[in-house]
Length: 171
Image (cartoon, rainbow, N blue to C red):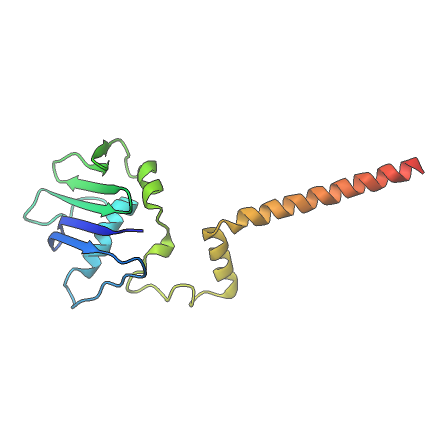
């Protein structure tokens, strides 16, 4: 869970701190007030997107977005001439190209289920029952349980057949 985010020099946000609650958070406001920029800033840390530097405030050479959870602060700094970097609790991570470094992914533990964009269809409600079930299975790793159960049932059938064949030979 994210406790807060700090956004510096990202689009219209010169210096913004947002505290999040433990439940669902909704960002509301007037048109062109920076709501989408907040989501984009979070996405910069979580997904290392968008690429390029067009989102850096015109009056700055770099931007920095920090996300804090219960025990870590993960930051992503990007600049026009500055070396791009991630930081975890002040420790710099380098050489990550377009990917998000594994330690960042592990700490933030984000999935598509965590964010909803303005034009996205209502989450789960717009899906068919089959699509919904498949999605929830994936999120909860139930597909692994289904695979394990299928494997156990296959082994049980095979062992039962072997036992039956063995008993038939003894008679």
